[in-house]
Length: 212
Ligand SMILES: C[S@@+](CC[C@H](N)C(=O)[O-])C[C@H]1O[C@@H](n2cnc3c(N)ncnc32)[C@H](O)[C@@H]1O
Image 1: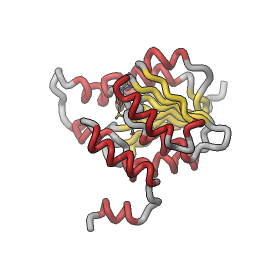
Image 2: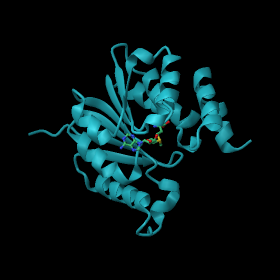
Image 3: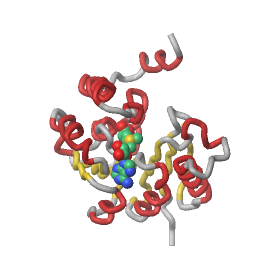
Image 4: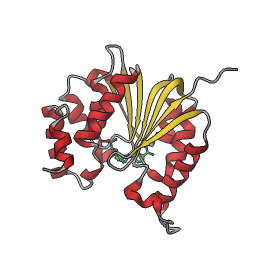
């Protein structure tokens, strides 16, 4: 038994729906590696449980796996908005949400997050950034004022298969995007931050309540 399977054996199970979604993603989709999966999914749920956000925004839905995990721990009156740019994913995503008893808490938006976010009403208590690595800084700048003080910003893949340790080639815009994001976060005094060495790196930021 590996340490990874030991961990999965000793934490909460994912629901039957999630494990079916995960299997289907591997059969029907070309990049199933992007799905959060069992461990990260349970951690996302736990973060919602601990922080108790009422409104969550996810940037990058893909299959809806993480959306469903985040929605699991939302309070009764909670909601999650999730944005996916690839309209070819819409049928797959809606199929998943329609099968879930959490569907009334989920609002799916198809389109570019950079266009959609300015059109969404209200602020968020938690944001999960998990879309185009080249644009992490843009997403962060766009959402920052929309996150309530005391809110949480999560960003996935911030270790980027450990490519953050190398000097990227000029053409490797994704690694460059992640490096720029990590530098930006490091110097942002408006937040407390930590990188969890989970899977491909999960950055957790807490937005400070700045006193005037
Ligand atoms: C890593 S996957 C998301 C995985 C999902 N959050 C999960 O944990 O299961 C990234 C997704 O972001 C989408 N994406 C990329 N750029 C985007 C943008 N600007 N706005 C919305 N979605 C975007 C991609 O099409 C892809 O489906």
